[in-house]
Amino acid sequence: MYIESIILQGCEARLSRSSRRAQKHTDFTSKDIDEYLNKIRKCVRENKYSISLNENRNENMEFIEDYRIDTQKEKEILLSLTHKNFCYAVDNNNPKFPNEKLYVFCKRFQLENWGFIESVNIYIKTNKLKTKYGDDFVVVISMHKLKKPIKFLFN
Image 1 (cartoon, rainbow, N blue to C red):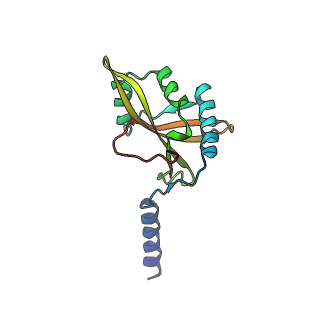
Image 2: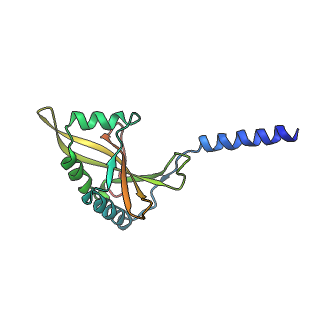
Image 3: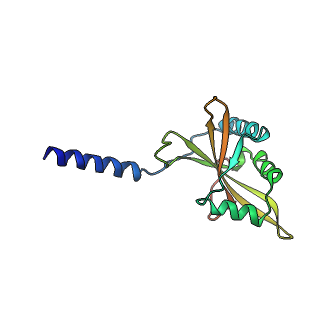
C-alpha cells in the first residue's frame, strides 16, 4: 500500500508538470517593455541572438524563405520593435525552464514575397537569457506571419 501511494504521487507530480499551463502576463508598464527592448536591441547589434530554425520551427524557416529574410532584414525587424508592438509575456512551458518569461510582439512590416511587396503582421516571441559568463543572449523563438488576431497591451 505504501509503495502504491508513492508511485501514485510520482504520477501525479509528472501529470501536474506536463499539464502546467503557461500563464499570460500583462502587468507591465511601457517603461518596463522599453527597458526589455533596450537589452534586446543591444544583443541584436552585438550579434548575440539567434532565431530558432529547428524541425519544431518550420513556420520560422518558411517565413524566412518566403520573404527572403537575411541577417540585415532580421536585425531591421528586431531593432524596430517598440513597446507599442508588445502584446503579452507568457511563462515558458518547457519544464526545464519554469522561471523564464517569453515576450510576444507583433510588428507590421513591408516585405518582399518573390517580387511582390506585402504588408505583413509578424508574430515575434523572444527569450532573453544569460550565458554562462553572465552576458545577455536573445533567442527569437518565433518569427513568422501572424496566424490569429492578437491584442496589443499599449494600443
